[in-house]
Image (cartoon, rainbow, N blue to C red; front, side, top):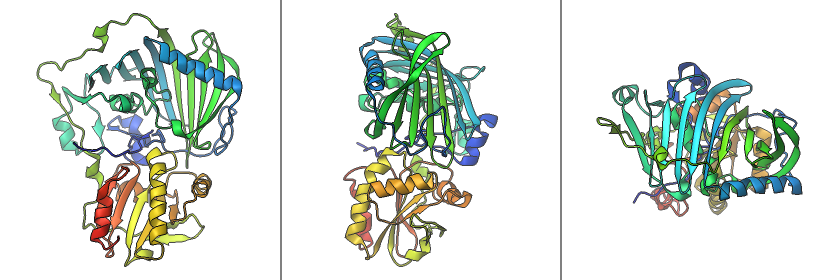
Length: 447
């Protein structure tokens, strides 16, 4: 059985092809972006103050009123048997709109779901159906183009196809599936799978929740609560209706080198209404074929490839060149703050660094997407001492997104580079006790 490693695609554990692709997505609608766990999985953000919230890096401290409202909302989801709503979705980078979508969502326990998505004012582009055992995604018109596939492969398999996977309750994340529907949405602010008991990967990094006031949304009186994650790297502002304790408006702000904002406006919210089981049934029509997404591993540089040299700003205020470590083995890791798997991997890498400090193994971090000051604070809090590149310049982003990932963005991305400066092994994600990295290090004389 193949073991899966954790990869951030938020906008967490999603992928997006490149910054240029992301900016032209809504114009061409030709490429599907997966945002990295910052949401985007979404991962492109700066430090602008939005809607009166605290500045980037200011974690929210809980108050009793905010905590009570959030707990009541989660308890309502937990006790409900069915739920449905329409979601008007929009996301932007530094004020530039990247996508607008309309998503209809139906939920029923246990593990039944349906999502129909379309660009704002357009036709349905993708449908998700979870029947309790299988999760299906199909596209009534044409399948989106994934940046890890070749254009000719897309042309051969873009119509009358579907994807299918077995439902794993621990990984049943409908929010992560939204980008696959091809309507221009990234990950959703509200995780629909909370209705089914799913625990979001950001939950361990929850800072706090507070009451921010009361406001009316489309005539409904709402309590406004604010939450933050990862020491203020991500903020949520939620308008919770007093009538049924469910959201009517949600806004997310993620801080890196740009400011990513995501908004969901809900309407036609129904709780515990009768939804026929037929709503959650789908079978491929005659002639349709199952399509499998190309492996993310196709974006990796193959063993033996010369590792492209670079020189960028370091966390200590100096410069680091890959060639500085010529003659040593280098473990190069591309990462970002909003990536839960990166946070889990870092203590392991720090341990390796301390074991081999001054010897033949160098651990080198590379972050080209996060705000420099936020990143320095994160490294300080986590007591990370191995060298790190912190540089969000276009040249650094190109090395990250185009040279070492060849058009994708998923983190953590790890490469082991041999003493001759060639790729020895590369992989995405982090899996505890994975023997392969150590096996490759041993081949290079590192024990």
